[in-house]
View 1: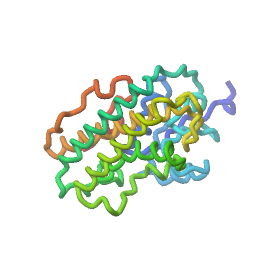
View 2 (view 1 turned 60 degrees about the vertical axis):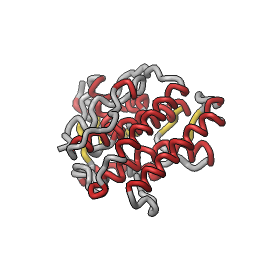
View 3 (view 1 turned 135 degrees about the vertical axis):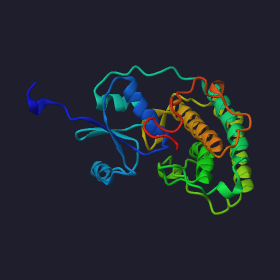
Length: 264
Protein backbone atom coordinates (compact mmCIF):
# COMPACT_ATOMS: atom_id res chain seq x y z
CA UNK A 1 0.00 0.00 0.00
CA UNK A 2 1.47 3.41 -0.91
CA UNK A 3 2.44 5.49 2.09
CA UNK A 4 -0.17 8.13 1.24
CA UNK A 5 -2.91 5.52 1.62
CA UNK A 6 -1.90 4.34 5.06
CA UNK A 7 -4.82 5.06 7.36
CA UNK A 8 -4.44 7.54 10.18
CA UNK A 9 -4.19 6.06 13.69
CA UNK A 10 -7.26 5.65 15.87
CA UNK A 11 -7.26 8.11 18.77
CA UNK A 12 -9.31 7.99 21.96
CA UNK A 13 -9.84 11.18 23.94
CA UNK A 14 -10.71 10.43 27.58
CA UNK A 15 -10.29 11.39 31.24
CA UNK A 16 -9.74 9.32 34.41
CA UNK A 17 -12.80 8.03 36.24
CA UNK A 18 -15.04 8.55 33.21
CA UNK A 19 -17.12 5.39 32.93
CA UNK A 20 -17.93 5.91 29.24
CA UNK A 21 -14.27 6.58 28.45
CA UNK A 22 -13.18 3.36 30.12
CA UNK A 23 -15.93 1.38 28.40
CA UNK A 24 -14.88 2.80 25.02
CA UNK A 25 -11.21 1.93 25.50
CA UNK A 26 -12.07 -1.60 26.64
CA UNK A 27 -14.39 -2.01 23.64
CA UNK A 28 -11.60 -1.19 21.21
CA UNK A 29 -9.09 -3.39 23.05
CA UNK A 30 -11.50 -6.34 23.06
CA UNK A 31 -11.84 -5.99 19.28
CA UNK A 32 -8.10 -5.89 18.72
CA UNK A 33 -7.92 -2.22 17.77
CA UNK A 34 -4.76 -0.34 18.66
CA UNK A 35 -5.22 3.32 19.47
CA UNK A 36 -3.46 6.42 20.70
CA UNK A 37 -4.69 7.19 24.20
CA UNK A 38 -5.12 10.91 24.96
CA UNK A 39 -5.97 11.95 28.52
CA UNK A 40 -7.42 15.43 27.99
CA UNK A 41 -6.89 16.35 31.65
CA UNK A 42 -3.14 16.19 31.09
CA UNK A 43 -2.80 16.82 27.34
CA UNK A 44 -3.78 20.35 26.30
CA UNK A 45 -3.42 19.38 22.64
CA UNK A 46 -6.22 16.90 23.23
CA UNK A 47 -8.64 19.71 24.04
CA UNK A 48 -7.51 21.60 20.96
CA UNK A 49 -8.15 18.51 18.85
CA UNK A 50 -11.68 18.23 20.26
CA UNK A 51 -12.34 21.90 19.53
CA UNK A 52 -11.29 21.26 15.94
CA UNK A 53 -14.01 18.60 15.76
CA UNK A 54 -16.46 21.09 17.25
CA UNK A 55 -16.99 19.16 20.50
CA UNK A 56 -16.10 19.70 24.15
CA UNK A 57 -16.80 16.31 25.66
CA UNK A 58 -15.33 12.84 26.09
CA UNK A 59 -15.07 10.07 25.12
CA UNK A 60 -14.39 10.78 21.48
CA UNK A 61 -12.90 8.25 19.06
CA UNK A 62 -11.26 9.74 15.98
CA UNK A 63 -9.41 8.66 12.89
CA UNK A 64 -8.19 11.46 10.68
CA UNK A 65 -11.04 13.89 10.25
CA UNK A 66 -13.71 11.32 11.18
CA UNK A 67 -14.91 11.01 14.77
CA UNK A 68 -17.64 9.44 16.87
CA UNK A 69 -18.97 9.79 20.37
CA UNK A 70 -17.58 6.82 22.29
CA UNK A 71 -20.98 6.10 23.80
CA UNK A 72 -22.32 4.64 20.53
CA UNK A 73 -20.29 1.54 19.72
CA UNK A 74 -21.62 1.02 16.20
CA UNK A 75 -20.35 4.52 15.35
CA UNK A 76 -17.03 3.81 17.08
CA UNK A 77 -16.63 0.58 15.09
CA UNK A 78 -17.30 2.44 11.84
CA UNK A 79 -14.64 5.07 12.61
CA UNK A 80 -12.16 2.41 13.75
CA UNK A 81 -12.84 0.30 10.66
CA UNK A 82 -14.34 -2.97 11.87
CA UNK A 83 -17.69 -4.74 11.99
CA UNK A 84 -19.61 -4.94 15.26
CA UNK A 85 -22.70 -7.08 15.65
CA UNK A 86 -24.09 -5.49 18.79
CA UNK A 87 -25.00 -7.25 22.03
CA UNK A 88 -28.06 -8.74 23.70
CA UNK A 89 -29.84 -6.33 26.02
CA UNK A 90 -31.92 -7.06 29.10
CA UNK A 91 -35.62 -6.34 28.93
CA UNK A 92 -36.70 -2.89 30.14
CA UNK A 93 -38.22 -4.47 33.26
CA UNK A 94 -34.94 -6.21 34.08
CA UNK A 95 -33.06 -2.95 33.54
CA UNK A 96 -35.41 -1.11 35.88
CA UNK A 97 -34.87 -3.80 38.52
CA UNK A 98 -31.09 -3.40 38.17
CA UNK A 99 -31.32 0.39 38.46
CA UNK A 100 -33.48 0.15 41.56
CA UNK A 101 -30.95 -2.17 43.21
CA UNK A 102 -28.04 0.07 42.18
CA UNK A 103 -29.72 3.17 43.65
CA UNK A 104 -30.44 1.33 46.91
CA UNK A 105 -26.82 0.25 47.17
CA UNK A 106 -25.52 3.69 46.27
CA UNK A 107 -27.51 5.26 49.09
CA UNK A 108 -26.06 2.80 51.59
CA UNK A 109 -22.57 3.76 50.44
CA UNK A 110 -23.33 7.49 50.43
CA UNK A 111 -24.36 7.19 54.07
CA UNK A 112 -20.89 5.83 54.88
CA UNK A 113 -18.85 8.71 53.45
CA UNK A 114 -17.53 10.70 56.42
CA UNK A 115 -18.82 14.27 56.34
CA UNK A 116 -15.21 15.51 56.52
CA UNK A 117 -14.35 13.60 53.31
CA UNK A 118 -17.28 14.66 51.15
CA UNK A 119 -15.26 17.31 49.38
CA UNK A 120 -12.07 15.27 48.96
CA UNK A 121 -11.13 14.98 45.29
CA UNK A 122 -10.93 11.84 43.21
CA UNK A 123 -7.46 11.01 41.82
CA UNK A 124 -6.60 12.66 38.52
CA UNK A 125 -10.05 14.14 38.03
CA UNK A 126 -11.67 17.39 39.22
CA UNK A 127 -14.62 15.65 40.89
CA UNK A 128 -15.23 15.33 44.63
CA UNK A 129 -16.62 12.34 46.51
CA UNK A 130 -19.81 14.35 46.99
CA UNK A 131 -20.05 14.96 43.23
CA UNK A 132 -19.45 11.27 42.50
CA UNK A 133 -22.30 10.30 44.83
CA UNK A 134 -24.53 12.97 43.30
CA UNK A 135 -23.71 11.82 39.77
CA UNK A 136 -24.97 8.29 40.47
CA UNK A 137 -28.55 9.45 41.07
CA UNK A 138 -28.31 12.40 38.68
CA UNK A 139 -28.01 9.95 35.76
CA UNK A 140 -31.53 8.50 36.24
CA UNK A 141 -32.78 11.97 37.18
CA UNK A 142 -31.70 13.31 33.76
CA UNK A 143 -33.43 10.32 32.15
CA UNK A 144 -36.62 11.10 34.10
CA UNK A 145 -36.52 14.80 33.24
CA UNK A 146 -36.25 13.83 29.59
CA UNK A 147 -39.13 11.35 29.80
CA UNK A 148 -41.50 13.25 32.06
CA UNK A 149 -40.86 16.87 31.09
CA UNK A 150 -39.21 16.73 27.70
CA UNK A 151 -36.05 18.31 29.13
CA UNK A 152 -33.18 18.04 26.60
CA UNK A 153 -30.87 15.12 27.38
CA UNK A 154 -27.53 16.94 27.25
CA UNK A 155 -23.91 16.34 28.19
CA UNK A 156 -24.04 19.42 30.42
CA UNK A 157 -26.92 17.96 32.44
CA UNK A 158 -24.65 15.09 33.48
CA UNK A 159 -21.65 17.15 34.60
CA UNK A 160 -22.29 16.66 38.34
CA UNK A 161 -23.05 20.33 38.97
CA UNK A 162 -24.27 20.21 42.56
CA UNK A 163 -27.45 22.08 43.52
CA UNK A 164 -26.88 24.67 46.24
CA UNK A 165 -29.25 22.93 48.65
CA UNK A 166 -27.24 19.68 48.85
CA UNK A 167 -25.04 20.83 51.70
CA UNK A 168 -24.92 17.91 54.12
CA UNK A 169 -24.69 14.17 53.63
CA UNK A 170 -28.33 13.86 54.74
CA UNK A 171 -29.33 16.39 52.07
CA UNK A 172 -27.63 14.18 49.49
CA UNK A 173 -29.28 11.03 50.82
CA UNK A 174 -32.77 12.52 50.94
CA UNK A 175 -32.42 13.79 47.38
CA UNK A 176 -31.13 10.43 46.08
CA UNK A 177 -34.00 8.62 47.81
CA UNK A 178 -36.42 10.99 46.11
CA UNK A 179 -34.91 10.19 42.69
CA UNK A 180 -35.30 6.46 43.33
CA UNK A 181 -38.93 6.88 44.41
CA UNK A 182 -39.63 9.02 41.36
CA UNK A 183 -37.94 6.51 39.03
CA UNK A 184 -40.02 3.60 40.31
CA UNK A 185 -43.21 5.67 40.17
CA UNK A 186 -42.48 6.60 36.55
CA UNK A 187 -42.05 2.93 35.65
CA UNK A 188 -45.29 1.89 37.34
CA UNK A 189 -47.27 4.79 35.95
CA UNK A 190 -46.11 4.90 32.31
CA UNK A 191 -42.66 3.43 31.72
CA UNK A 192 -43.70 -0.22 31.57
CA UNK A 193 -46.08 0.52 28.70
CA UNK A 194 -43.66 2.55 26.58
CA UNK A 195 -42.28 1.59 23.19
CA UNK A 196 -38.58 1.29 24.01
CA UNK A 197 -37.68 0.58 20.39
CA UNK A 198 -38.48 4.15 19.38
CA UNK A 199 -35.64 6.59 18.65
CA UNK A 200 -34.38 8.73 21.50
CA UNK A 201 -33.25 12.34 21.16
CA UNK A 202 -30.03 12.40 23.21
CA UNK A 203 -26.73 14.24 22.81
CA UNK A 204 -24.49 11.27 22.06
CA UNK A 205 -26.02 9.87 18.89
CA UNK A 206 -28.81 7.95 17.18
CA UNK A 207 -29.97 5.38 19.71
CA UNK A 208 -33.20 3.80 20.87
CA UNK A 209 -34.92 4.53 24.18
CA UNK A 210 -34.02 0.96 25.17
CA UNK A 211 -30.34 1.81 24.71
CA UNK A 212 -30.70 4.99 26.78
CA UNK A 213 -32.31 3.02 29.61
CA UNK A 214 -29.50 0.45 29.45
CA UNK A 215 -26.91 3.21 29.57
CA UNK A 216 -28.70 4.73 32.56
CA UNK A 217 -28.28 1.40 34.35
CA UNK A 218 -24.66 0.58 33.63
CA UNK A 219 -23.52 4.21 33.91
CA UNK A 220 -25.01 4.55 37.41
CA UNK A 221 -23.77 1.06 38.23
CA UNK A 222 -20.18 1.80 37.23
CA UNK A 223 -20.03 4.93 39.36
CA UNK A 224 -21.53 2.98 42.25
CA UNK A 225 -18.64 0.53 41.90
CA UNK A 226 -16.32 3.54 42.08
CA UNK A 227 -18.08 4.75 45.22
CA UNK A 228 -17.48 1.36 46.84
CA UNK A 229 -13.81 1.62 45.85
CA UNK A 230 -13.65 5.11 47.35
CA UNK A 231 -14.94 3.77 50.68
CA UNK A 232 -12.40 0.96 50.64
CA UNK A 233 -9.59 3.47 50.08
CA UNK A 234 -10.87 5.32 53.16
CA UNK A 235 -10.60 2.07 55.14
CA UNK A 236 -14.39 1.61 55.24
CA UNK A 237 -16.07 -1.67 54.33
CA UNK A 238 -19.07 -0.98 52.06
CA UNK A 239 -22.41 -1.77 53.68
CA UNK A 240 -23.91 -4.65 51.69
CA UNK A 241 -21.52 -4.35 48.75
CA UNK A 242 -22.98 -4.95 45.31
CA UNK A 243 -21.57 -8.01 43.57
CA UNK A 244 -21.69 -9.17 39.97
CA UNK A 245 -25.31 -10.31 40.33
CA UNK A 246 -26.40 -6.70 40.92
CA UNK A 247 -25.11 -5.77 37.46
CA UNK A 248 -25.86 -9.04 35.64
CA UNK A 249 -26.78 -8.47 32.02
CA UNK A 250 -25.61 -4.85 31.96
CA UNK A 251 -22.56 -4.10 29.76
CA UNK A 252 -20.31 -3.09 32.65
CA UNK A 253 -16.66 -2.13 32.10
CA UNK A 254 -14.14 -4.72 33.29
CA UNK A 255 -12.16 -2.23 35.37
CA UNK A 256 -13.65 -0.11 38.14
CA UNK A 257 -11.58 3.07 37.80
CA UNK A 258 -9.51 2.89 34.62
CA UNK A 259 -7.42 0.47 32.54
CA UNK A 260 -4.39 2.79 32.47
CA UNK A 261 -4.45 4.57 35.83
CA UNK A 262 -4.91 3.07 39.27
CA UNK A 263 -7.17 4.80 41.78
CA UNK A 264 -4.10 5.37 43.97
